[in-house]
Image 1 (cartoon, one colour):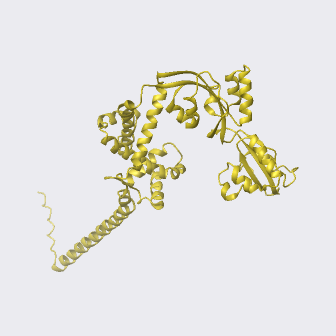
Image 2: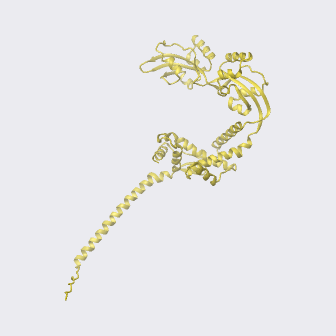
Image 3: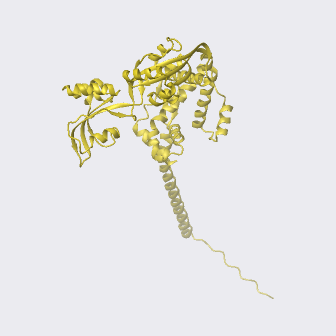
Length: 420
């Protein structure tokens, strides 16, 4: 018969032991509680820091257009979208254009709504999907603006542009001086080709590119291309008559003439102290040289004739370094063989632009009611749109406020955009 295994006697916990265990458990609970409190406090501090450093600034209002507000997050997203695939270092250059983009998009949206022109959300979503853009606020607003512009051009501005207008078929060539224009006119009357001479000599872009043949054009397109002074002649002259030289003081042409005087030169520092004028024609430059040789003051003549910006303040005087103005100026100013105080001959430069020239014009044909070309109507519609957008900015009822976005806030936004 097997013996029964002896049972262990029940352990009796004394009051003293119970008290000690209770203290240990209480201590553990306190330690655990303190640990949890510390973790919660740390997380709380981190949360407050994140809220102050990130969440709160991103949700601050940055731009207001009438009753519509855009926060800093929206501005950051616009910066990122405009930056596209450009290097992050390019973002600072977009800071101001991003602001204007946001403001103009909203002005167009609100202005179009007043004209009864809107775009559905479904149309915006379809365009986003077709373009592979995310369905976020900034891409949606940009796409909506683009769709609104197309709709405005087709539905609002198109009916304002006439389909038919008085037009003239024009041949034109721009020359630098009255003397040159008189000589070229004589060559044309002797049978030389207008197109060949225009391609060779014209100093105005359109007439040169089209060999003098500007084609059929209405008055409003010509006003944009050539300016009003010559247009008045074109629509008042007889068909088939070659004009005499017509002076146009506002037209821009692709040539000018430099006069340079070197006062001092530092060859080691590659620096020259010079007086400079930029003149409209060789004829004008020769006249100025004659007056300089008659002891007239260079600074006074520069203020009267030079087309360089800032001549009123600096009177044509510069500390010149290579590349500052033009290669032809450098070639003269830094010529070691040149004696100081020598005035250059007129130096022709076709890399710069000056104002003023003489037109020769011939009207090939006229039509009192000719259908306008599609590209001419598109140009006039785009011009009307630009003028309408400009009127939104000028409208005193439109309140645009971006004063919150100072340089510090823009720098912060740029930093956020660079991180993304």
